[in-house]
Length: 308
Ligand code: ADP
Image 1: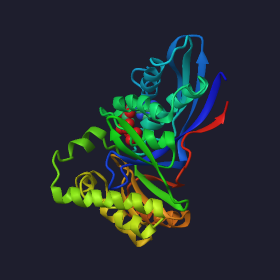
Image 2: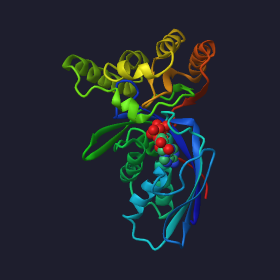
Image 3: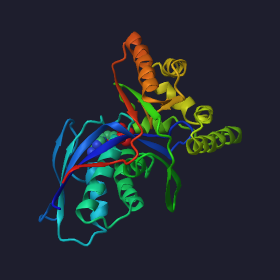
Image 4: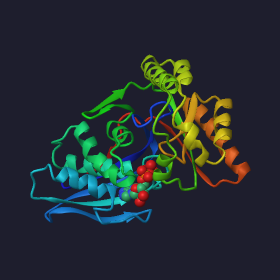
């Protein structure tokens, strides 16, 4: 195999009570990447369409992740990468993660799959570090594993794929404003009160249990964020109104997607997700906030091969 074309999905990280540890994979929005084996050594990004991003592999998360993997491969080949960006950078739905995960997935396939999925996550995290300054896996893990993922531990890296009820769907609204990940990190408090921590890990346990038992009431009761949302939500236009609209129209819960500005609502069934998306859209149409909407079921497999 000399070339592979793949779909690299968007992802929602944090999911209210799982800051930096939970993530889920979307199905209806993603980038496309072509990875080619070349006789020229090293990593080269030959083309990026859809958005203006650096082709210097040291400045693009795809290049950094690919170089991290290449260092651990015994090969005389190099790789060329083409990226069709459909996920806007800085949207909060894992734009950088899709590229980082796609690069390592493609190279791994072209090399006959020498690395397991968790090892690919570790390489992709090096790309993520370029985008946000931190080694985090809450977007690259669901992109590579698919479904719902939990980063149980970062050191050593331990990722768990969580059972996900088949009816679960997501509505995402993306206000067309920029929230810098650094600003979204700067508003966070360094210490958290014990009482908040207790409520948060109660909810995280409740959410995981609800996913396994397909108990939608329990999932709904658990979708709260005591720790991050109160501080970050000030950066998102009409956040309270979006949440109210989602709840009134049957969402199980809603919150900030990743570091924002996108807002997600988890729903039972695509029909409800569509209704919730419409209601959130009305909030922004009334207040004149330009936005994009995405409605998706959970993508159980993650990155998909389009052709090879
Ligand atoms: P998101 O949560 O939407 O991925 P991030 O803040 O994590 O947003 O990542 C976006 C940042 O990463 C931007 O500064 C962007 O320039 C940088 N970046 C570098 N390479 C890529 C890439 N291939 N795709 C998307 N963003 C990239």
